[in-house]
Amino acid sequence: MNPICFAFPADAPVGDSLAQALGADRGVLDLHTFPDGETRVRLQGECARRDVILICGGRDANAQAMPLYFAAEAARALGAERVGLVCPYLAYMRQDTQFRAGEAVSALAYGRFLSSAVDWLVTVDPHLHRLKSLDAAFSIPSRCVSAMPAVTDWIAAHVSAPVLVGPDNESTQWVESVANRLGAPWTVLEKTRSGDRQVSVTLPDPTLLRGRAPVIIDDIASSGRTLVAALNALRGTGSAAATCVVVHALFAADAETAIRTAGVERLVSTNTVTHSTNAIDVVPLIAAAIRPSLRALSA
Image (cartoon, rainbow, N blue to C red; front, side, top):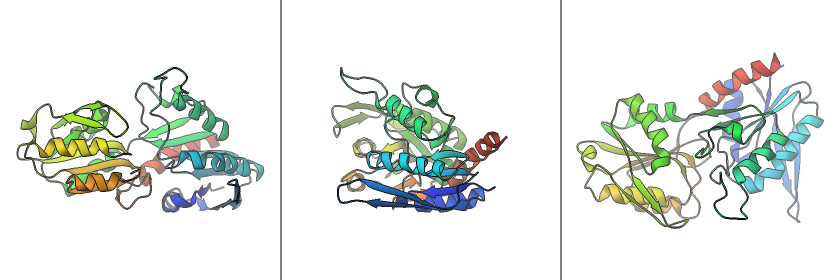
């Protein structure tokens, strides 16, 4: 029997595309918030003896956590064979250690929470720094999808003579991957962060920019200050205006405005988080990662 997909309302476009790519049926995940802030979750669709796929973009993990848990419970109550989760942006991965006494290690805690709710997980470019893999946080089968093949295709189609720029050391894995696919030069800026919104960067070798179009690649744009600092550093070299490519377009508060004010030529993102900057479709990559999971689980 075909799997059935239920997407959170904000993630309906990805849910529709994913259901089509998988040949899955599309159910409706209905949310209602009561005056006291509690949430009712209702699944509309046949779940009995089927693989149920929940699609939750992860943009607002605090608000989505309990509804997601309730949705998984509802699917099982309706007789689902297995319940999987497609969470393109996996929140809370940046707090992967205890930086100060008394702090919760949210990456591990959130991993345990999701592992208790669903049977498997597929996500896109999670922010893994000190954790070597999702297995360190999750006790369920989990797969990481790289958006870089789709990012590479977009850059190849839209930017001539690119030089790939990472705004900090943590972006090296993505910048190097795309640069190798394109056969283009790359560099990583040296970042110093003094607060949630205070960031400064320096460019190690400005000569790499000569005669090329800079493309800044980062996994997450939240406050936007890292990208703003990178744009300012590049502008100081007299280089051409830069293109910014972001995997997860969170864009909190005035982030997008700040980035555009800093003089970005083009600001694009993948569709892991629904946003007006979405220009790079990663749904085919997600679908490819889900198919073997469904086959293996059904064996």
